[in-house]
Structures are given as structure tokens and as C-alpha cells.
View 1 (tube, rainbow, N blue to C red):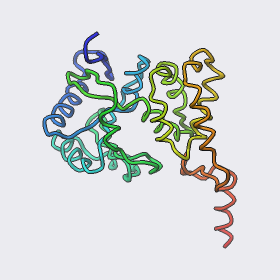
View 2 (cartoon, rainbow, N blue to C red; view 1 turned 180 degrees about the vertical axis):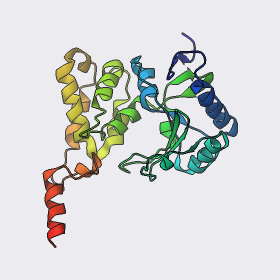
View 3 (cartoon, rainbow, N blue to C red; view 1 turned 60 degrees about the horizontal axis):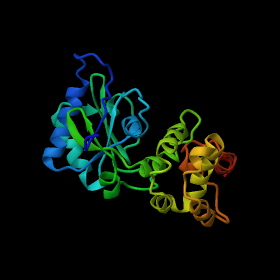
View 4 (cartoon, rainbow, N blue to C red; view 1 turned 45 degrees about the horizontal axis):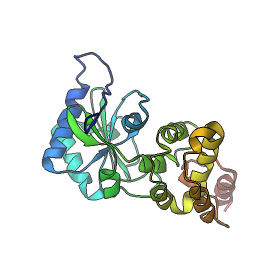
Length: 247
């Protein structure tokens, strides 16, 4: 096996598909300018699980201080702000597009639980993608970020279960538990599902992790549904909103 895991992900496998050329240009230019980034989303999941997903866009994770430089770069390559097509929350992502190509630039989690730091960028698996040697997000950070995507119309826990199945014996579990910190019960929930689903693979996890997770269980606290979905769907949140309307 070479130093770089070779994966090929494209919107369409036809040679005339222009998507890889645009992705290659952006990745090459970012590397040339010294902008550090890592690739996330379905492409990153595929790098760990070999579970090919439709590459409707490419997710580029950068540190907050590199956000403006990366946005300027995609503009120079002819991409426009997707906000013109569909408004989105700009606190954590910049969506750019041209024709049927979307390049997302991310510097934080959607729920603002964390910002991208250098470990997101440098710890991940090296891959060869679109003719460039790059890194995808670390599996631990992928799992961490996807923990909170538990909504009515989208749930990333299937991705987490696939990541666990393929990397349970390779993960830096202590690093992952440190990352999730007070949200360890949420990690414990998906791990409980994984242990039920694939007991043999779950047995590859170090036993101490279950004790570490138990230490982080919150004794009390307000409902935290807003970390999963900003829309009011959880009963306490609905009651709070209703009380505000009455006042």
C-alpha cells in the first residue's frame, strides 16, 4: 500500500464531468497558498469506510483565521455565494457554487459547540483525491461533529455506526472522549446502539472507555435539544416558547 490511500469520488464517473477539474483547482491553489484544510463530509466517511456516497459537494474544513482567505480563493475560481440561491446560517459555513458544483467552507460546528482547530486539520488520514495529496478529517472529529446531527429530516448516526464498525480498533478513544467532554452521554448513546448492533466489533473497544463515559454523565441541567436541532421540537422547548408567547 502506498503512503496515500487512493480513493476516487466524483459526482459522475464520465470523463467529461467538470467537477473534478474544479475541485482539483481549488485544492491545488489552497495548498499552494499555504491554507491548511481537511476534507470532511461523505468523502471523509468514504476514506474510512469505503462506503461510497454521492459527492454532491465537497466540504473543506479550515481554521477560523483561514476562513476569509479560503472564501477569497473560491471566488477567484468563479464560485459564487450560495446564499443568493438559498439562505443559510453563515456563522459556521460559507457555501459557494458554480453550475452544479458546491464547495462548502466550514470553520465551526453548526451548533457552535466547537470551532475547527489544528487537530481537525492535521490528524486525519492522508489520501489522494482529485490529483492532490490531502487529508480528510480525523475519524474522531468526524464522529464528534456527527453526534449532534440528530434531526427529524436528517440523522448522521448511520455514518457514525459505519465509522465505528471500520475503525473501532484504531480510534484514539481517549482523544474522542476528551473532545466530547460534557456531551459524553450522547457518545455513550450511539456506542450503546453500536454494541447492540455489532457486539463483536464493539468488543474491540477498550473497556476503560465505558468507565470514562460514566464519569462524564451530567447529574442535572436544562434540556439541550438546541444542540441537536435549532427548531422547537422537544416538549420543554415548546413549553418555553409557548410561555414566551403568553407573556
